[in-house]
Length: 269
Image (cartoon, rainbow, N blue to C red):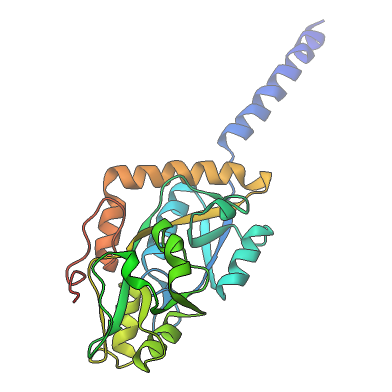
């Protein structure tokens, strides 16, 4: 009888051991693959090929708090989007939010970067811009394919001659050569290219800004990514609330939502 009573306790003991194992077992870190296209100061490589920029700092901080690790890969923008849409990568870096993209990606609720959109013109005899889209009628305007410049720009498209270019440097070269009157770019990314291409004496930014557009982090829409998206969404909200995102923006010389533009980004003609 004594043995029988001992065996009666065995299931409870085994259950307690199992529960203890579940509670104390360390969480397994997940390696998140984040992909995007090269974007100055936001997502780029240093001289030794290491990823750097605001997006890298933000994602490393988020992954650490989530108990994950993160790996970065650079791809042409269409391929990066396709990889996340198909669930071949975990996170898309820097997409603008639009109705069409909301059907393809699961965006975090809040943006982590703010892009200033501006027109560039030739310094000598170039077009002018005072904020009136009606003044663009008849002008030749270059814009980057796939970028969203805002509702007013879209509404005025029919009044000017639009040339879509694959990259910012293509638009700047067209402007410098006189093939277009205006190029719609962004700051500070375009400013960096102006200097690198040796065009600082040829082209200049115009005031006021066309507007601004926010960049996000986005996950695949597949159900298996939903929990990670919720976790990272909450963690990004904490970074914003604590002021950490603003500090990372200042460190990288980029504007984040709710912060003033970095010093030196206000000059225009």
